[in-house]
Image (tube, rainbow, N blue to C red; front, side, top):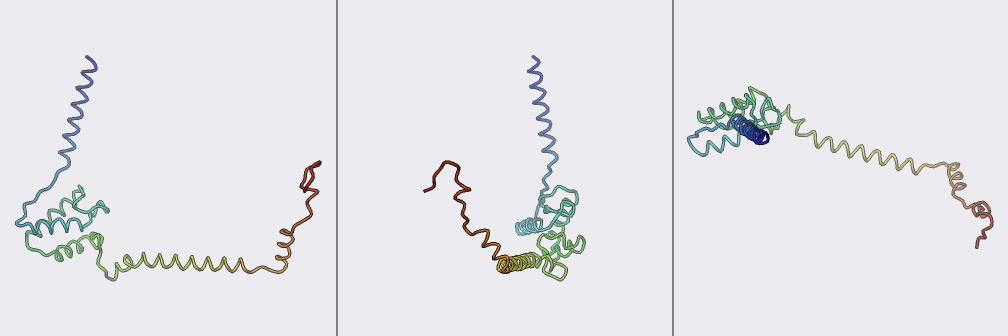
Length: 169
């Protein structure tokens, strides 16, 4: 009897948690006047970044500001605004950060050029280091050469290396 009560309690709790999670994930639906506006809405909402979440677009974010931006986007599209007008409005209000693909302009030029500059700098540093190592390896004094020759020259070690009582061929 106790196991049946525990099982029933677990089922009730699971159903409650499922109902709460489903009711929390509200999906906004907008009635567009034509399918072209709906496609533009999907495209623009995927292109605009949520100011709060920072790495989610407004289409995927559940933040309240993302909901407000989706509502604003819908109203502007239905009001007849072009994509550029909508993007200009969002950038003027939230800055260039709100776009996932910022325009190629003065302030954002560093964003576009930095990867190439970093890779070029890394290649130049690597070449300089490798060239420097090659010069160090090639420059050896005559005294150092004599010491190396002495270290690597064969020595008479037949008596030292063989254990006593063994004959070497």
